[in-house]
Length: 403
Image (cartoon, rainbow, N blue to C red):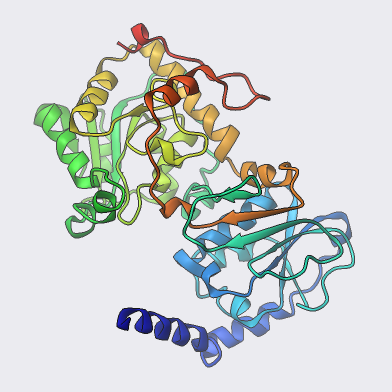
């Protein structure tokens, strides 16, 4: 009872802070008067009408990806004049990145007199001119019917706005890193926590410890500086712990594109991490325990290698170490194809707009909910079915080629 009261008190303070903070007040008045672009009548329009501060969670990451996804389809954003929404734009790290996208502000009670997509977190009556209504839910749950869609994970915002996005990987040429990992490994965060207790998965540091012990010091290289990454190495596994060396955002995708496989260790509070999406975007094959958290699921031997415990992790590592070049190339192409069909900018927005539903609900926090691993029968079925009817099926790697 007391923790819940404290949480509610903190939320109340957070809501009131903007009304007295000078910078947030200045931000509101600056953005409130953003004019209508001269060529606005020729643009597709998406109106974002947010009432709740929850849209600012994770430093504005949800909003960043939502706006970018529709903008990539040609829908320019218009934000309704709501103080709490506009006042925090400069304050939230990823929300302020949206200032680089042309937008304007509309009165909250005077929406455009033309067709537009209406995106809101409020159960208000749909505007007359809305050609599509998309309601945002902050509930922590999975979808329950065909009108609901789980918000996917995307490439990290800092990578999205880097000079190397989108990447243009070469999936046919030989790569100089066989297995790669880079990320945070702070013991307090990544040695225990929700991934073990809530999701029944091995924590990040346990996955790394097993991998390093499996190959031994001869085949593992702990990268300590930029020069270590530039120097050719015969080590099978190269590991970059951010406490030793932090890879700049502009260099991340080019380095990731040099690897055949990426060891997708889980996050702290939930399994999914941006580096999984980035590895797929680079045609770098993930070795992963949580491929079933993506929709559609990643498939072992097609676009990833999967594991579920210590023994299966070692088997996946052995498989990666002996896989023939031809099989690696096929899996690279499949991983990249999966990204372009399902996770590239615009794919989720396209999915919402072509669903044939008068209204759709997007569940922003579905990725935080545990889900059962697919059965062996489901996995076998997935390898036999193309994941998108309009595209060519992914190439299946024969088991003999894997070995």
